Length: 281
Length: 295
Image (cartoon, rainbow over all chains, first blue to last red; front, side, top):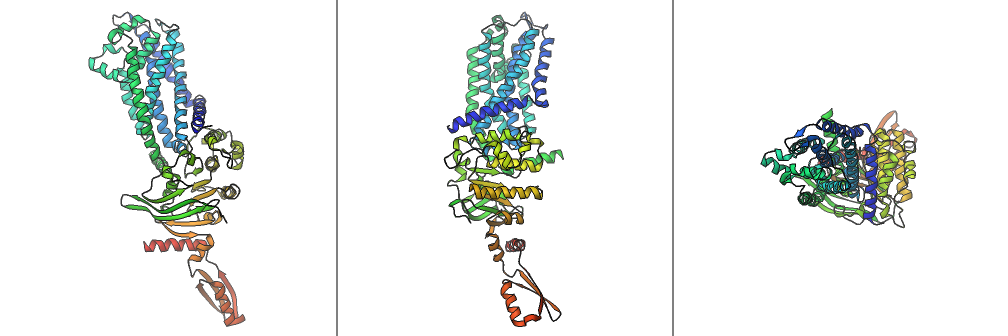
């Protein structure tokens, strides 16, 4: 077997083990079910609120947008897990193993994506029952699938970059804030057309907005496109913007990851450990 | 003694941070199957040296050849032939012992050769490091000693030709230490693995190593077998005796010749003869002291 095939197989197996682990311990299980359940509750309370004079209910608009938001949060998971892996020496272990970095990253992609699909289902299945006005047909699932795949391609490498740049779990907390802000203006909980023009431009530069738009195009009736910018689902633009982020991420991530990996050694891991213990003690 | 070819060749290695030289002109070699101990007080540069050889750290100057490659530019095939056990690991806490060994082992499968079958079978390896009854346990629930044995197991899962051990037995109880020493000796003898270990424990170096390289203040101050090192410092043996009711004490490089001469001159009036050979510990302390004075 070639080294690449070995790494692919080991990475896939690694991802499955990590995925299984995330469903067999309390803290991770809580993460998998708490947020999606909370979102179901939010959507349920918004089901009767109408959005201006559009004739659409806010709950209906919000449901697919939340799917988009959750998908873009995979970026944060990726980033947090990489930082945690660096702190506890998992990354250095990968560096000491042949093709270990490739295996580690592949494993992360598999476990983060797999976890995300479960999270999306935990939210989508009950929400679809509770919220009226969706137009789910045979065309919905292929659209949902390509938007999700392209979205992950755009956000996971970005997450890897963030995870390499921010060296501590603490710094990770800081980057979550601007991301939450971005989600706030990205038309997830309220249509972006109700926002000032400049906010709309900021929102449209980030993947979150386009993931939400793509999800809405998959699950809402075509008439709902009237609420969107330009009154259209803008699939071409969605592919273009997410595509640019994907290319950018895939170009930058290997460089940043390699730089980060190069700096890892036993003493750097030990140093971080001592600092971490110093913080606690 | 090992007669294999050179697998580790370091010449004029220098490491400098700013104006501070951490390593100065470090030169040594290791042959296949040899167990080499890098001995020195804390801060001597042992970890820096081993990290450069592991390919985890760039050097400032000097030539380094590990298994025929420069570790700073070595590829994944080289990585598969090298095993690394660092001072403190706490990774993969959610994984189970056997599961992790099988997973990491699978990364070595494509580097298996006719001579070296890689990886080491996970069950055999778990047994070899005495963790069979903990094979299904989550790694974060292991005790310190068990965790350390797992670290060693991970270091050798790819059946390395060269194994780096950085302070391998720190925190071991005497029983665990003895078992660990047996494991390392077995690796070197049976599997022809070359071992480079760092330690500040002289007894460990003496017990395990074919050869000891003493590092202090970033310099090598001695390099040889335990016996050679002991001989290096003269005037260390202490000879005591009693003659005519008076006690005498003399330090000498050659205690045997001294005692012979003593009896020739005084015959059976010499009583209570006592010879204390210089211990390796005395030698080591004297070496470090001497190096510190001349610095």
